[in-house]
Image (cartoon, rainbow, N blue to C red; front, side):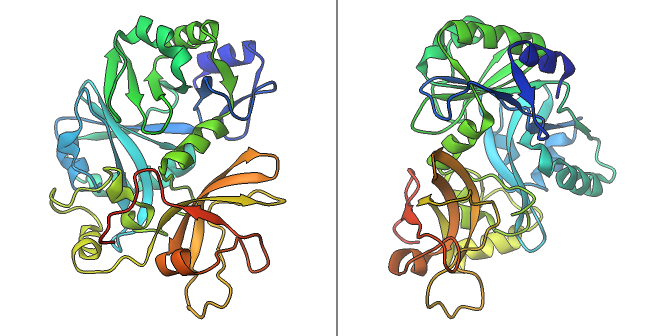
Length: 344
């Protein structure tokens, strides 16, 4: 975490956890308007004259579509087409920034540097140079407008103010990702708090990702899913026209020649303990040699009540009873807000 930013948050009563993110003791688990420290997110800066061409051969989306005003979701896959990490890509001046959980930084940095070879590009960990924060709800409009002027109106759109960027994140509520210097972050935080925003924990941000059907790959699920299994193709996270990248043949074959057997659903469950990413799901009476599904992410939505993203066999989701474990509670499944294409 940026040291200046950490000192500011601690001056407001926050404690910093092992994941590097701030927690406020009086924070509500869910609130209509919230300020959230996202220091659990890391930043990989890819710069240099050949940075776009280098990334174009490494990620699942078309880097040519990233601009000063547009960001995108993307992923880096293994040769078998399974996501090792997924992330948001945006442009800050001439540098491409990849935003992802800090827990996924080591594997992605190692992989990208392994493929860098003689490309005229540099790959750096910029996680502590800039601050990541989230703003949820309409009451922060005044603070956002004071710094950025007109806030982004479209999903994935980017607004700039000096060295800072503001990205509109998809979802049913207004939500923005801020990335910028600590001084700008502090000014924005104070203005939004004065406008009525509550200081909340990062779990609220993850909960809104779940409700929006946006997956996040973490160490427990790395190398587990091809992009289509987590609906990445439905949220503009995969390009099927960009050309070759690591794992592209498997991803394209699934899209054009294969039949998708698993996809990602939103789920709710009442449970005594929190489900965890990577937990194996259970379908009573299933004779499949493979698991019918896994938890992608889960967050508390109230006492003993959780909302989840799960990758599940389509047949089991439509016809059977899916449980957290062999004797665990049943999941209540529903499609994500963007729906499923009729032909899948």
